[in-house]
Image (cartoon, rainbow, N blue to C red; front, side, top):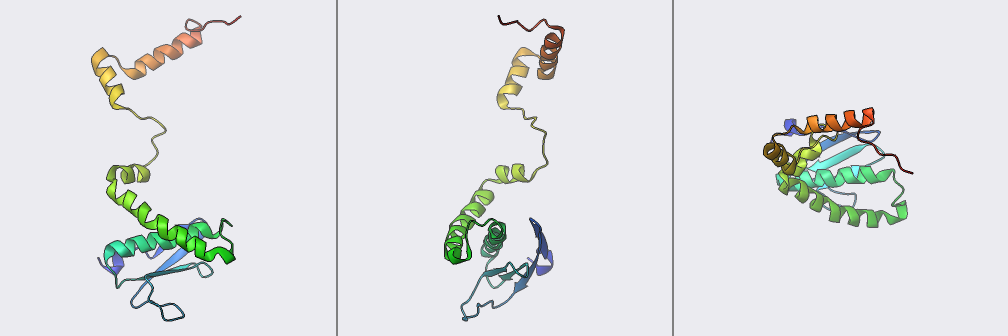
Length: 153
């Protein structure tokens, strides 16, 4: 994959986060890093010296830091706990999204307005030769005319 094909900026809440793709990323102590998020400057640095799968999961990992940054769930003294939680969740989240293609497609699809048709709905329509929408309309019309309602005493 070419660097030009990778996202350079993303919106995370009210942040516009710049993503830098670099070689040989290290922290201030000289430790090799795969990714680094800096909330104060709204930047994510990703070390591209790793395989695609690791880069993708690392980008999700760093995004999670931004998602948690304004929640107050992890005060500054608990930064190690935040890191551990994200270290557990990011690969598992990536695995769920990668393995379950239909789920990912659904999660990223446009809203349907809550109009879902199940296999049972299609089966009922075929068996009865009825149009479900017509049945619903008939029920609404009966209610409006008072035919389908009963008074309680």
